[in-house]
Amino acid sequence: MSCCYSKCYSKEFWLLNFLVKLYLFFIQLTKCSRYKKEPPLDNGVVPWLGHALEFGRDAARFLTRMKDKHGDIFTVRVAGRYVTVLLDPCSYDAVIEDPLSLDFTRYAQILMDKIFSLRLPHSNPAAEKSMMIQHFNGKSLSSLSNTMYRHLQSLLFQQTQRACHNQTDWNTDRLFSFCYSLLFRAGYLSLFGGEQNNNRTDPTDVYEEYRKFDNLLTKMARSTLKREEKRTAQSVRRRLWELLAPAGLGEDSGSSPWLRRYRHLLQEEGVDEETQRRALLLQLWATQGNVGPAAFWLLGFLLTNPEAMRAVRKEFSSISEQGLAQCPLLDRLQHTPVFDSALEETLRLSAAPFITREVVQGKTLQMADGQEYQLRRGDRLCLFPFISPQMDPEVHQEPQNFKYDRFLNQDGSVKKDFFKRGRRLKYYTMPWGAGTNGCVGKHFAISSIRQFVYLVLSHLELELCDPDPQMPKVNANRYGFGVLQPEGDLTIRYKPRHSH
Ligand code: HEM
Image (cartoon, rainbow, N blue to C red; front, side, top):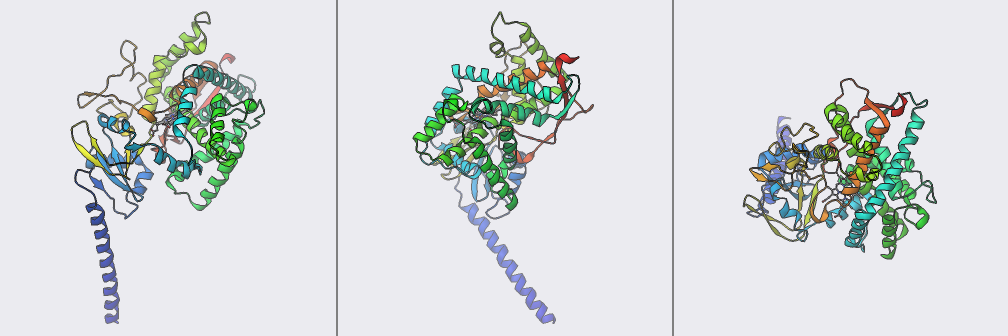
């Protein structure tokens, strides 16, 4: 018996020994296969997967841990890929200004396929982008902003009429869905059209389906959907494709000139009807996915910081009081340094995109401190400005705290002087990305959030229900995917302002 036991034992021991050796050999192999002058490599303990799980659970925490261990640049193994992470804002230009070696499109196409089930092999991203730049700037932007304001005003009016029956009753709501739903529906009506024309899609239906889609988005990107979630994702996507089908088709679709031209461009490229609808969902995400959540954080910070709220209200009141004689309201609403600083501060705390590029040809990355690192073709490069500069205590004092006037000088002008290691920073906050692939919709997004906050504060009495309110924590799964979303919410109550 004991002999049999020891035989079994030695067999198991041998197997275990073999596996451990195989594993060590694997680790050694992956380590050795990196060259000198490459950033420090951290494979993690799990073969192939590497750090994928920790990365996906809370990227900010994981990357801060890696930064403490390796410094401002390192390479991690993530689900079979090598991802080099650069966290020194003084060196970001070396990445942003080299779109030839560090390509934006390839990784974007992988995400498009995973999230939107969309492949556009014959598309012309440069043409699409220049068309978008044209429609979201200059005169087109002012016309679009006018349309957005009208929709925001009428949706807010309808919502308060419906919710506050006799105009003196308070209506209770959740701040996140209050902000997201209003901005999404107004943005949808302004860009995609709807309701009052031939395109009969109700924006509320689109919003509700979109939120289901949004909740699964990070899992779709990471290919970690469970079987049931996969089914839900497919059916929600299908429903959204149906709802978006009429958008951009013809003058009477009620869609913006941009969307009509975009759809026309797809048709010229020979993209079939089904794929066009998928592309529309991608555009819906790009144009609506960040604005509502950003407005939530901003209103949340204002409601929990009375001094900041007073300062923003004062600025808005003085704009309202200037009267029409000087210039139209929407033109006056463009000069709001206090609001702009509060929004910049909000985005510093809540915008956490990965700026990811694919290394398409070997590159020597020159760091600001003179060090050089080899980047290998086929690897990915990722900037995560949320850790630095945005939450870097060397750049921003008490970075965890909301200070509405952080981006204002004493004389009320815009503050642009921020330093790290004695060096004045070009990138002291980076919610919009930068360079060739920076955000095309930045001005439209800022204008929409400003209009929304202006309308809410001037037309509603709005307060938090909790006498001792705390801002909710962030949903840590969403680091890397643009503006963060809360884990939990703030309960608000509101009624029309004229009612008291
Ligand atoms: C608070 C709102 C928004 C934030 C924080 C935001 C943020 C960003 C960031 C960080 C990028 C760069 C991604 C990269 O470099 O990898 C980006 C790109 C982009 N954004 Fe936004 N965005 C917002 C709203 C909008 C809106 C309203 C639109 C459309 C009107 C828009 C359209 C785009 C487009 C088309 C790109 C891709 C640019 C390219 O292809 O090079 N964004 N955005």
